[in-house]
Amino acid sequence: MPVYSEKVMDHFMNPRNVGEIENPDGVGEVGNPICGDMMTFYIKVKDNRLDEVKFKTFGCGAAIAVSSMVSEMAMGKTLDEAMKITPRLVAEELEGLPKQKLHCSNLGAQALNKAIQDYLSQKKAQGGKA
Image 1 (tube, rainbow, N blue to C red):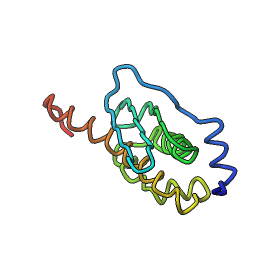
Image 2 (cartoon, rainbow, N blue to C red):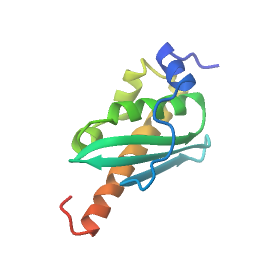
Image 3 (cartoon, helix red, strand yellow):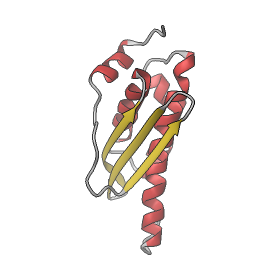
C-alpha cells in the first residue's frame, strides 16, 4: 500500500473547496480511464483572478488530495499564475506522492487548466478580450 505524507492525508480527510459553483465562469473535466479517476473543476473569475475554485472528484485518496491542493493553490491567483501550476508543483506542495500516484497530480493541474481555457474561450466568443 502506498505511503502518503501527512499533508496528503490531511487534504484527503478534510478536502477544501469541494462542490460545484452555480453558473461557473469555466468548467474543466478530466479523467483517467485506466484508474477510473474523474475530476471536474469549476471557477469564478473576477478582475482576471480566480475568485472561487471548487471541484468534484471521483477517485482515490491521492486524487482527492490533489484536487483539494490545486484548488487552494489556485485561489486568488491571476489566470496567468494559475496556468503555471504544474503537476510537479502540486506534488511538491503535498510533500510528495507515491510514484504510482503521480498521475493524479497531472489530472488536477489539467482540470484547472481546462477550466481556465473554457473561461477564456467563452469570453472570446462573447467578444471580450482573452
